[in-house]
Image: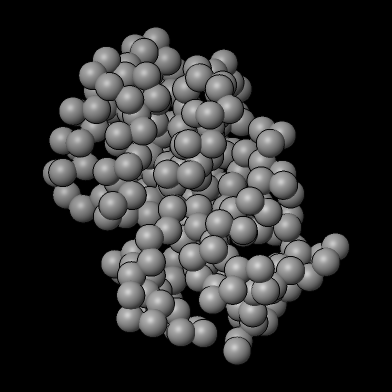
Length: 230
């Protein structure tokens, strides 16, 4: 059974999710506060869980703090499940490393589908090698470090996952739809071509010698993007 950490304080919702998870062969651990969530995660490596379902508004603080702490050491899938449908919260959740963002009220079957999709993506994207090298850029996957010309580059979670996706698929045209599917599984309308273009632009600012004339991460007009080997 896949192991899920559910960080949620609503008792009635917890009971419904526990029942639904068990019917779908998902073994759930409950944490009702940030403190309890961190205690669960500190009992062993974050890898002891296969996925985290995380509420934002918790009795002792904001779920973003849990996501931020997890992302310092692990790439375990995180799905935000919250009543907040504010665009700023959704963008922040995805930027700091959330794999999906679902707003309440929601349909149980859809949540299970999203969980299974996140688990499949996690399995398919686990790196076989521990280091990526290309165009003077080194990614140490086990450490989550990006180094260019001997200097560390600070990337957001989305920028980091984008870079890994491109470097693991050199010389391959990646359509915008494929990139968005690999990075996000959200139905919100603002996760669109323009949003992706913003993230691509931010990444170029950090990895290209001349972001206005990119050589590594190039745009194939009307089709998508490609990582060139130079």
